[in-house]
Image 1 (cartoon, rainbow, N blue to C red):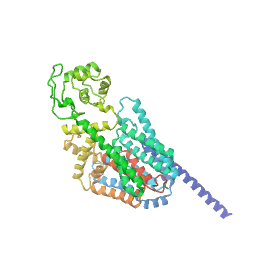
Image 2: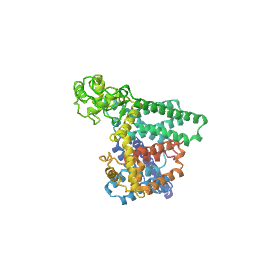
Image 3: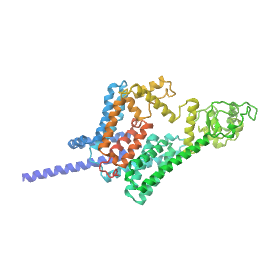
Image 4: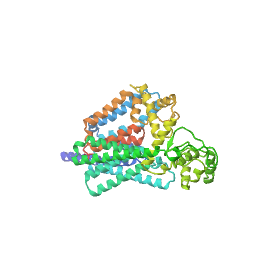
Length: 530
């Protein structure tokens, strides 16, 4: 009887442990699904959910098995090394409070890998549920963004997506496209292929709406990289198809760039004829020979501010010296708009403006081309940035030129502290001090690098940077993570984003990086099986 009672007790204990394990597993999967959705919609929810995930992991106990997973998981060790470098380099920082804040901000980079990589890998059904939650949320956010764009007048493109930076959201769209292509090739069902193609086309259109042109560069470079790395896995027909598509894209982009550049710089009749001295009303023109061109005309030729001011009061209730939504006054906006239409900047040019033109100028739109959506608008905006820098060395309000200025500044700071860096918390302070010392036009801003590689080099120097890079390269190589096409695609997205963004300085970027690494790395999950 005693043995029977003992056996029954052991059975009940095992049954309780099994049920308990199932509950923890269910909570683990549900929280992962929620985090995958929250990372593009809510900072508060994302923070709350990763803390709950960690708490569930702690309550689950089972430390022996978890410690064994930790000992043999090089990727988890790489994430621990990343946080360890942050902690060690606190010793050399002057701004300790910011350093501690920076580490606190990056806690998901250790919490998410620690929990997920010491837990049993997701099976095919669980991984599919997480993927559906993630891709579904990205799609819903794009619909919300479209509704906001259509219903909120003069909504800046940076605010179309209300929950996350438009650039970070662009990274999530890139990854969603990768997962859609994976689903199409993996399941090979007609309706799945159709849905994947339709959503991909929709996402590409939405990226234009967001002005997330970096995402297009990421998609192209990622495609070229995958084609080169996995060319041996492809059939001859597939290689020919992919090469043809990528070549067509290169030719199309090159052709469009050539056409737009020619149209932008090809001088119109007004700029090639002898400069008139007087307006049709007999007032003197002002011609500034600064050489800045837009839409084939010199912006500062044929100016009569008196007539422009006089005519503007007749067609608009906005004062001539009032600010537009872009932060500029009506005058320079009107000047560029008339120039873009090839009109003189006087009463004659003013009378040829339509009510739609007046409304656009009042909104701060300085070029009629900017009323369009597409590559021409992008090309003309970039060329105007270049012209402003060429003529005035201006970088203010120009995102690409600002990045270049910040990269130059960051490189200078790194070269001053090449081996050990400035410490975990001193990057913003030291970068700003160098901007002021170099009398940079960005000296009055709080921007620092806009480049994750430079951020790490400045903070940790070559020593810390090499430690971090070595640990991650070692993990990816030893565990053969790049055997997965999906993981390699994610890695391309992340590493390319590091060039133009300090991706790991916001929760959205941190969560994107951590979840992508630990969920897409091949751990016998159907989601990442190549």
